[in-house]
Length: 128
Image (cartoon, rainbow, N blue to C red):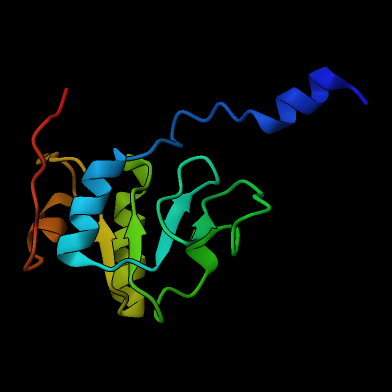
């Protein structure tokens, strides 16, 4: 066994793989949930019982490549890398999916009016 290779394979350093604070997730889930499926997550960042990973093979994920999966049968929770927000909105709209989306308040982004056009938006204050 090569311990260095083993350690490298188990530690992903993907800056886009981050997690919303658990207490914030639980508040959102209490208000808008329950969410059943995490989208664009990993075994390290998952907040739901089931999840689809974004692009990395993950032995605990129900499926890999969240964009090619069917989102129609469950309420999903998406906290994607910000460069994927437009694709998440398009996928959810195309499939008629119910998705709780975490996205930044970036008024200059082309997807921002689409986010704001939804009947429910929750703004989270910056928390230190």
